[in-house]
Amino acid sequence: MNYFTSDLHLGHRTICKYRTKFNTVEEHDEYILQEMEKLGKRDILFVLGDFLFDGDHYDEYIKRIRKMKVRIKLVMGNHDSLLLYKEINQKPQSPEGSIEIQLPLFSYKNHWLSHAPIHPGELRGRVGNIHGHMHLETLNDPNYFNVNLDVNEYKFVPFEDIKNKFERTQMKKEGGDA
Image 1 (spheres, rainbow, N blue to C red):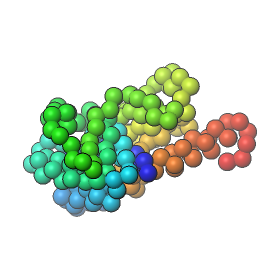
Image 2 (image 1 turned 90 degrees about the vertical axis):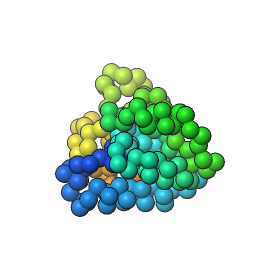
Image 3 (image 1 turned 180 degrees about the vertical axis):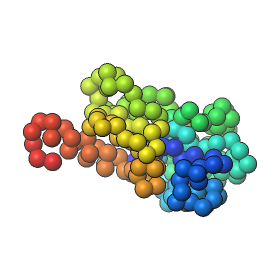
Image 4 (image 1 turned 180 degrees about the horizontal axis):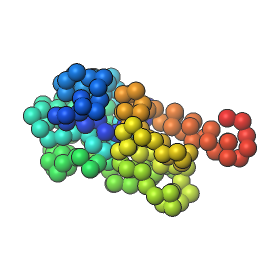
C-alpha cells in the first residue's frame, strides 16, 4: 500500500513545543519510527518534506531507517539538510527498504506531490495537490490535501483515503451525491 506523510521533524530539538502530545523529543521520534517500522516491503511511504534534522541522533536514525522494509520516496523540505541529500545519494540502499529523493514537484497518479502547496494555477488538469508544510493549517480549497502528521492524528495517510476525498469533491462539483 502507498502512504503519505510530511513534516516528521525527526531529531528536531524543540518539536515538543509544537507537538504537545509528546513529553520528549525521544518519545516523539520513537513513536514515528515505530509507525514506520510497521510498514512492509510492499509498502511505499511518500514523505513530503521535513523528514530528518541533522543533530545528535542523525546517524542512529538514518541507520535505523535504512534497515526498515518500507520504501521511502522523499521530497526534500525547507528543514531537510544537504547532509541528508548527500547521505541518500552516496551510500548504497538496503535490499528491502530504500530512500529515494524525488523531484520537488512531481506527478503521481495524476496528483501533484510537493512539500508546500503549489499555486492553484499550476494544478493544470491534475486531480489536486498532495502536500505538507502547513502543520495545523489546511487550505479551504478542495484541490489540496495536507498530509502533515499534525492534521492527520500522527498517522500516515493511505493513498486510497486521499483519492476518495478528491473523488467525493469532484462528485460534489458535478452535482452528484458524496
